[in-house]
Image 1 (cartoon, rainbow, N blue to C red):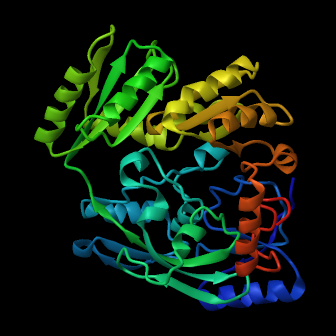
Image 2 (cartoon, rainbow, N blue to C red):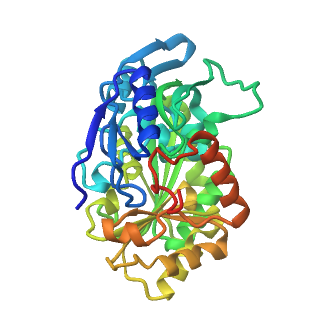
Length: 404
């Protein structure tokens, strides 16, 4: 177990600059800690000290009519969601709360951590990822330099889309201090159409058919029997959002288009639909399983094939489900020292996707590449980006790649 880190409280950008410059002078590495919900995410690479951001909190700008919100990086996601809810608005990318999956409490995620992990939920297939909603940000790089990128409109005229770099960088490039996000109105209502009775492959094919209709589903998941909803059969779940009259008409249209083959349909009302997708957002169907968790991203047409390759290789699957019409696979396997990494990644490589080890022990995350190995050219580019922001590898050293 790693010893408690020396912690520096970051209250503003000046604190961040001073802390990072001092770390550079001493050659020490720093972990960036917000609410702590993602502390167990990534490689196990002990740092020398922690830069704590909860004091760097507060919404600095919110203009509901302009659909824009700015907040300091340490602001709790729950605080932002409550503010938006009171104004009938939302973060449409539906950010995941990793806390319960990783053994922490729910509700501690910060907006800085959400963006650093590019945490995006079931609605991504329609609304896009977190990075697509980031209008601008302020940060302090590993050089100790203050940087401001973007602004309050979805426009980039610099030639460098820095938002795409910091989203998903897990704090390895810069300490984010303030984020400006696009927000969107909440739908009047929602429902979920369940198609029950087809097997796993057929259910995924049904989801792909649904995406090709004009019915505009906002989320599509495949739930194997027993994984959610206490169903004793495989189910395809399709969420529809919008005005009540539109949701009803589109549901009926989908039923007509997808009927046949012995499939029966059920509808979850707004309350049950909301509960279902919140659980899928946070990987609830596998969070309570005792095992190691993989998050696999592939083309939707390849999802079932990847799981079948893993099954045929003899990997004991404790639970799994599909999101994004089959393009995202959550997989829980029995615990081993290597988390079956070679088998899982070989199965994924055939389909051209990537697999991330989300939950495993510190020992396993020390010896296994948590993030999918990159091709040589991409790895070289990643290194150049890292060294342009953080040449001394001060920030989150070793968290994403062993070499930096």
